[in-house]
Amino acid sequence: MKTKFKNIFLKVTLVLSIIYFLVLIILFFFQRNLLYHPNENNYFGDKLEVNVEKIKIKTSDQIDLLGWFHEKDITKFKTIIYLHGNAGKLENRIYKLNHFRDLNVNFLIIAWRGFSGNDGKPTEKGLYKDGLSAIEWLIKKGVDEKNIILYGESLGTGIATEIAQNKKFAGLILETPFTSMIDAAKNFYPYIPIKLLLRDKYENDKKIKNINIPILVMHGEVDTVVPFWMGKKIYELANEPKYSYFTKYDNHMMEYDEKLVFTIKSFLNTLN
Image (cartoon, rainbow, N blue to C red; front, side, top):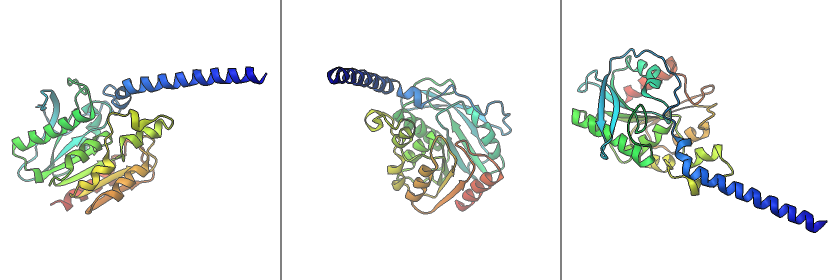
């Protein structure tokens, strides 16, 4: 009886081990489908209430990126580069961009490779190239590096922190930042060896120490996608001068209300 039970136990263990191994293989090869969601569109249908010029920005590996550029006065005002999150088209950010009309800024928002009809497939290295190409486009247009403000949203915080290292940009805004993609993935897959499998790591916690420009960190305590402790940790690791906007009730997509907009405006005023 004991031998029979032992054989059954070994067979069940073997089957479960095989299933677990197959799951790891599937996750390894399809992990970027889980990370990047170009066709998932939330906050859709808002009308753009600020004038933008639709542009194309060519990357170093010859991919044309769609961008929207609002030029208020590039010689008088600073310019925000908006680096969006892991889902949706540029239209999904209209409800945020409409608030920028009330700020004395120019802004450029770009769509990542593989997003908003762009060619290519998103990867960590690829998105770094996209972000740098946006910087180069602005500089060629006559915008000085010291007048550029990087604004990263969720996944975009990974690109923003990469680009901001050891640079003299005007400032950095991080909305719902994560410590690293390893930590963020562990939150959803606690029983998977994420560190061994993950290709795109976006290690914000390591890079934030190399940033020496004013930083604003914004995060909601009830974020169900990127836990609040990550945003708080990024703030703690950041060098001075640093500012925070932490709310008790905001989820991952923060409420773009008067308080948040006022916080951004106040931060911009500190940069002048």
